[in-house]
Length: 483
Ligand code: NAP
Image (tube, rainbow, N blue to C red; front, side):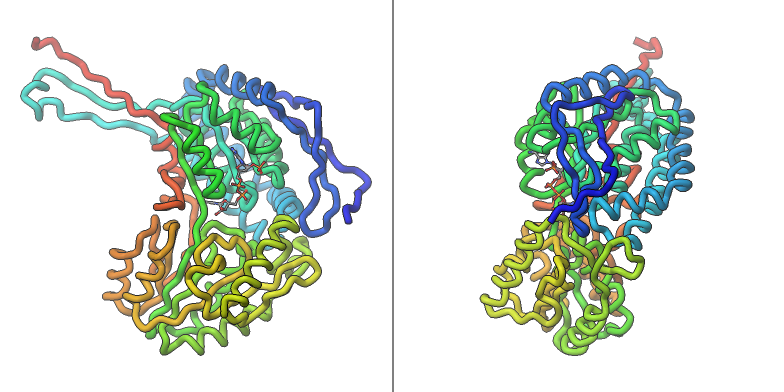
């Protein structure tokens, strides 16, 4: 049942610093309360083109702005967002059902992401080349410059609606690029909110344009337009692969999904890792690209781990995301709930055992632990993107790592061990973009290089690394007049 509140706000596109009306609007409902929270503008092809034109025309404005001024604008964003932190957290929580404790943590991280962007804006530089190292280089001096790549098309998912926008907008502005941003249809409010913060921070009109509407229309125009020089996409593998196919030679960064895994060695103090495993598997309802989905526990510690993990999981409070005690709330849509429940049912039919949770309660899926799930079941081999985690018993770290690698994904993996030998073995053998020693795969801070192998994507985020992707190297060679 969809309730209507007294005043739902109408939200416009932001093109060239103006709020732009559209022919159609789409109601936005909060996933937990199902109340209508806004009417969102639906852009057509023509309006997306207008946004790209605005960004294209703003290219010199931001590209030629001195680094200290770009850094200052980003510093202003840090200040304003710090002042508006609670407002931002409430927006995230309402539009995505992220429990408010995690929404506040996302805002804190977003502030850091913009802070890193402000700092990075001041250290974008090339290097001098030792030309006379080649016999044909005598009498030459040369160096590289890092120039802004041009208009960036940024397409973002629903699960971190403020911080994953920051991972694209922050480095783009640090590097001197204009942006056309298309946020996920379920979470446009955080993106529109930050665009207003940028305006207040002094960002010139046209540098950040926000276009809402279905990905199949808006995203498609962004990817297909020649004036867009790079597409930075975070989202599901299916959509990412479609974008890659369409982008041709256009530069792309693709941050996609995974079924992240953790290995627990036999010498581990189980009580010390339970809290991290609960957070890794169930924060944001498991809707995290590096959510803990598969755990491989040494057989000597398996029973103890399963028992203590289930006991801790059963303590988690379900309910309203705005309640500060809530740990698990609704999935992003009823359809996603239905899908997750059907995957649990498939696992049970396939011989697996539900150790904790397994059912929906008042529209919220209980945090669920499944044991003895065959590797070919969806809960094991596909990205579950729900509060579901699968436990497996192994007889050695070598066996565990082989099973971790038996995946079409490769984003991050973790291992808890007190053995240096096993830790080193894991760093060498795990086929992932990031290995966490003595932590869950869900660990991330915002300056670290972040990205995956296999179907988890290409390219890296983490401000410095995103700036690398968003700049072009230009070589300058001076002939000093010898010949
Ligand atoms: P999604 O369905 O792939 O959507 C992501 C974005 O792509 C949305 O803005 C969506 O718009 C847009 N889109 C949809 N179809 C498109 C098309 N044909 N062309 C261009 N854009 C299109 O993903 P999601 O459900 O929002 O997010 C969950 C996924 O993101 C998971 O797989 C998760 O692992 C991944 N993720 C990865 C990372 C990472 O850094 N590796 C981080 C977070 C999330 P609409 O909303 O309008 O459909």
